[in-house]
Length: 128
Image 1: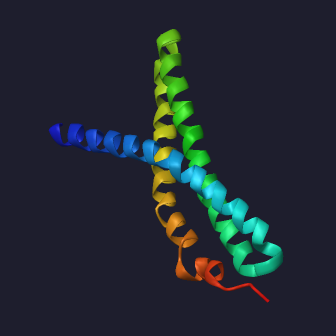
Image 2: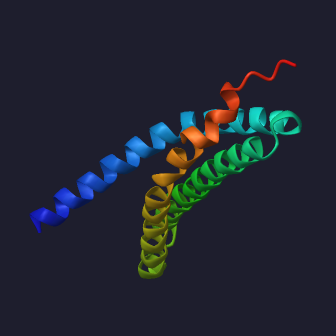
């Protein structure tokens, strides 16, 4: 029982850290995607690759935000519609699982977007 409490506390801490972190990452990913898309005519495929990878980061973070919002609404709904508490609890558990899956999927996304290969084209001298 105590182990479950510790596990839940760690999950909550991880979720809070992720929520705080993701807003800055989401904004940075958007700026990077816009810059990469603007550079596509000059840099071609490498810029396109970076734009797609940073867009993937934003998509993952957007999915997480949707799940967190759904969880919050489901908790509010349990206060109003207590007769449906079990069903709402099941939906809430699914959303928590979804958020956890998204956090797991997020881990490799920034690495892929910031690999040397993905960024190499940004360091090339394009003066002619």
